[in-house]
Structures are given as C-alpha cells and as structure tokens.
Length: 269
Ligand SMILES: C[S@@+](CC[C@H](N)C(=O)[O-])C[C@H]1O[C@@H](n2cnc3c(N)ncnc32)[C@H](O)[C@@H]1O
Image 1 (tube, protein in one colour):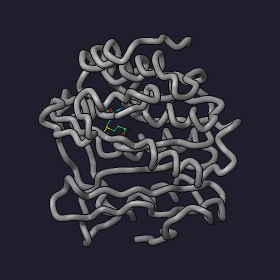
Image 2 (image 1 turned 135 degrees about the vertical axis):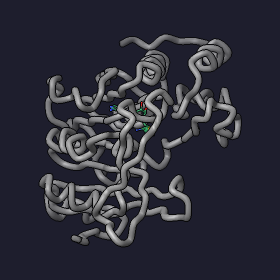
Image 3 (image 1 turned 90 degrees about the vertical axis):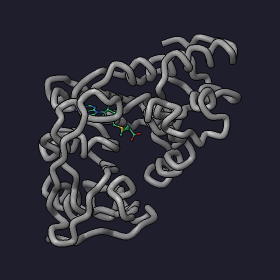
Image 4 (image 1 turned 120 degrees about the vertical axis):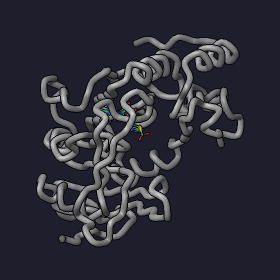
C-alpha cells in the first residue's frame, strides 16, 4: 500500500472523525493519533467514549529489542485483537518480514488501515489487517508465526482455552499473553465467569467471558499447549478488578528467555 501524504490539520480532522481511539500511534515525526484528543496523552476515558488511550511505542519497542536483539528481520508477527494496529506497526518498524493483525470490529480495522495509509515514520508494507473473530482464524490460511501477541483478549472470550490454543498452535517461537485477572487465592489456576456487553467497542462480541484467577491459570494452559518456559513480566494486583493485570511471555524452546528481564514462572497447581 502506498503512503498518502496529508498535512497535520487534515490528519487531525480525519482522526477526530474516526474516534474513539485506544491506540496512540505515531504517524510521522510531528503527529500521533492520540494528540487529537489529548495533547498530554493522558486522556480521560470519559472524553473518548469511555475508551482509554495508550501510548505503547517505547515499551513495546524495548520488548521487541530484548526478545529479538538482532531485529525482526525474517520474522513473522501475529497480533490477535490488534485494535488500531499499534503493535503491528512497531513490529514492522523493527523489520518484521510479515505482519498479520486482526480484530473482530470493523471500527478498529478501519483505523489500522487509515494509519497504514498515512504512517511515514516506518514502512507499512508487508502488514495485513483483517476484520475477523479469533474463532474464525483456523478457517483462514495465514501460515505460522514466530511471535504472537495475545493482549487484552483472553478475558473477552466465552471459551478462552480454545481461543488461546488457536493462537498458540500458529506460534513457533514466542507468545505474549497480557490479560486482566480476578485473583482468587483459593483457586489461582481457575477462571471466573463474567457477562459483558457485546456492543461496547473494547469488549468481546459473545457476551460471556472468563477471567483467569491468577498467573497460574495462564501458565498451566501455555505449558499444556507446549511452551517450555515462561516469565511473568507484569503482575499488577490491586484491590478492585480493573487494576488486576498480568503478562506472561512463553517460549517453545528452553533457554530462549534467558536474556529477558523478569522472573521465570513455573508454579503448578
Ligand atoms: C482491551 S482491547 C485490547 C486491544 C489490543 N490488543 C491491546 O492490547 O492494546 C480488546 C480488543 O479485542 C477485540 N476483540 C474482542 N473479542 C474479539 C474476538 N473474539 N476476536 C477478535 N478480536 C476481539 C476488541 O474489538 C478490542 O479491539
């Protein structure tokens, strides 16, 4: 796809029309999607149809650099529930050979394609975006991937075990699972059922969903799916479920994560 040049005001007008945005994405040196709503990038969700705004570029690039210190050249990157595609653009920025991002909502995929058309900060070729439900992924032939990102989707699924396995089965090297959690010390490897809106743009589309009760749940699932080692790279556990979040990074091969910051996680329950 060739890049379309627009001046800053024209870009801002388009971005405003396509709100709400969850991903603040740098389009060029002087403009990013989040600035339209919040020059300080600390957006109040109430001013963005209840959607939070995140600026993940620095953290994510650092993460890619520690997992693939020689760049992502020759690597394939899959993003499940890619939203406006921020992570896909950064994977390409670090040289990924092939990037596939999908999300169940057209709203987000339209944003991703808009950014793809206008981003000049890094190449946007070799990236595909699809409006697709995770459960329909096996019916498409996108091939296998080296790195899979499974962020913010586990707890929006009526059957997260099947959902995670679909992504895991396509992953040959590393999977990152970042999820909200509802800690239950009495049953940390279990899950807690929830019912969610199927129309809110950040939620799932199946109404029923499940939260892991602890990192043990995700660990045991990924271990069963054939990942040899894992690190817990985030564990935010505060009172009130909205602040409980974990991230596990799992590798097919033992020793693969030795240079990644964070503790190995190997609890079994
Ligand atoms: C909390 S956001 C996470 C966005 C992004 N992955 C991130 O970490 O910034 C949840 C996203 O999951 C998408 N989603 C929910 N259920 C899905 C499904 N069954 N298949 C694909 N995407 C889904 C939503 O449309 C939304 O973009």
